[in-house]
Amino acid sequence: MQAIKKAFAASLVLTALLVGCSASDEATRKTEQSADTLSIRASDTRLTTDQDTVVASVTTQSKTSTRSAIDSTIAPGLAFTVQVGAFAEPKNALRAQQVAKDHFGHYPVFNQFEASLKLYRVSIGKFESREEALELLKEVRKVLPKEYTECWINTIAK
Image 1 (cartoon, rainbow, N blue to C red):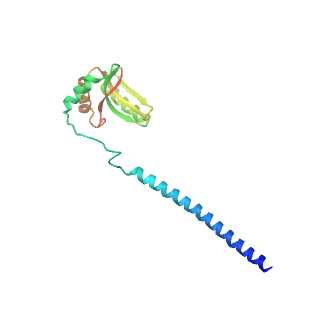
Image 2 (cartoon, rainbow, N blue to C red; image 1 turned 45 degrees about the horizontal axis):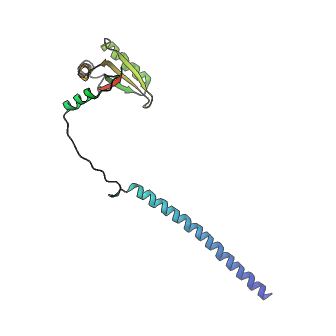
Image 3 (spheres, helix red, strand yellow; image 1 turned 135 degrees about the vertical axis):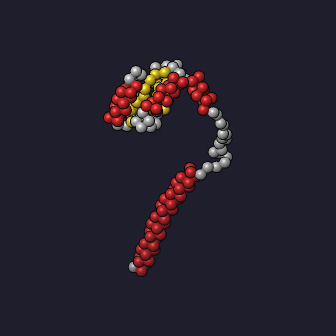
């Protein structure tokens, strides 16, 4: 009987050790996985010279030369326009469009929905050259400085 008790106690101790070891192995494995994940995440945000070197330079170009470059590189099928705003709300776009029609009705006024940006773009005119659009831009800023505080030249399809 004594021998059975000793064998039973030994098997309990052995079982407890095995369960403890497997739990410890599982915890160690999870800790190692977490550590690996953390090191991967940390390494994702660090830049190394060998892998992420970028050569950059600064060039200066006058606005005049930039504008002439734009004139010469406009794609066929595009025209210049004066964009007076971009609006997420249709009612705001319609209001801007109506003001443009009231003051510049002798030019075509566009209200185009840009699906990728979810914006309504309101613009005036359709010009072959940037210079023509620039003249209208100056006129718009002069006539309606408060309504169109920020307007710019853009391109649209002909």
